[in-house]
Structures are given as C-alpha cells and as structure tokens.
Amino acid sequence: MRITEAARRLGMSPRMLRYREALGLLPPVRSRGSHRRFGPEELSAVAQGVELERRFDVSPAELAFGLRVLSDPAVAQAVRDLGLRIGRLQAPRRALDFEKEKALRLLQGRPPGTAEAPPQGRPTGAGDPRKAAGNAEGARHDGRAPSEKSVTDGSATGHRPGQTSHRPRPGRGPAPGR
Image (tube, rainbow, N blue to C red; front, side, top):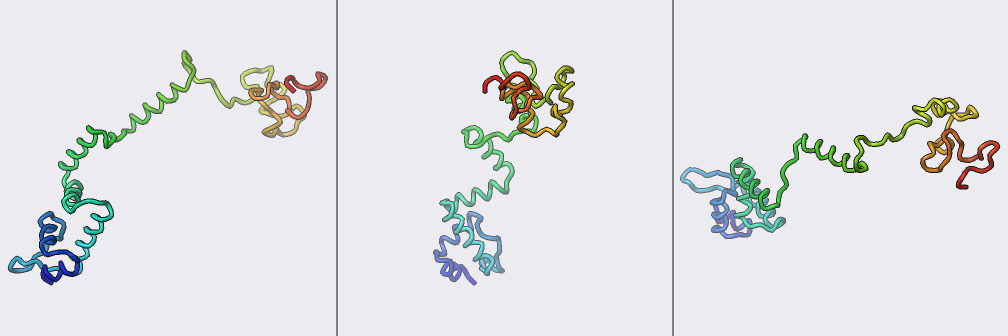
C-alpha cells in the first residue's frame, strides 16, 4: 500500500510517516520508482515505535537517537562518558575492585589496632588440653551426644566449657548468674 493508506491505517498524517522515515524509524524498503510500499511488517514496526514513544514518554527523535546509541559504538561510548561525568551512570566495577572493596569492608569491621580478626566458632576446649580432656570433640561429660543447647562455649551464658545449661554444676550449687 502507498503512504496515504498506511498513514490512515496508523492514525497519523503522511507527513508524520515521512518524518519517521527520515529519522530512520521505518524499515528501509522502497519499490521501483522510489515509492515506499507499506506491508504488514512495516505497519507493525511503525506501531511498535509509536507504542514505545507513548510508554516511555519520548519523541520520535529521542527514540531514533536511542536506536543510534544502541547501534553505533562511538555514540554509545560518548553517551556513556557523559553519563559518568554528570553522575547519571556509575563506572562498571571490575573483579579486582570488588575484591579490594570486600577486603576493606572486612578490615573496617575489626577493632582498631588488631592485625587479625578473632577466631569464631572454635570447638569447645580447642587448643587447651585441660579443657579438651573432659570434652573431646564436643562430647558431654555423661557420654551422651551434644545438643545445641546442652554444650556451650561460655560466650553467651557465662558457663564453663563442657557444662550443661540445664543442670547445676555438681557439688557447687546453681551456676553463676542464675
């Protein structure tokens, strides 16, 4: 179909359709004699462009520039540089930058003046043979398997390692703090 019929079907003027063509928003298809012929594919492409303009509140010229940014690497780089300069874009993080930031966050979480983070989650009595003797690998003093609440490292409750939290210490009365 010719431009007047296509414009009528799309609900716009032939002049607007020519403007969109000049911006590069139409597929480049021309028949012999340099007249543009519109088929279903061309009408669909124009309708899709109009829908994008409405959805994102942009003009045909802005949409055409967006397509140019996507298709021309030099334009894309120039727009990216401007975006970085005015703060609309952030520079992409490289893998080494991520690892450096991670290490700095870990270092900042330590108390000032410490060279190494304190060990966490050590088994009860680990490193101390006196404590490990009666509590080898977390076993309870009565030979039963440990449970989460029965054997503590003393950090939260004030109990000695190997002591159960539900029974008083033998021969000493209730545990301190009870």
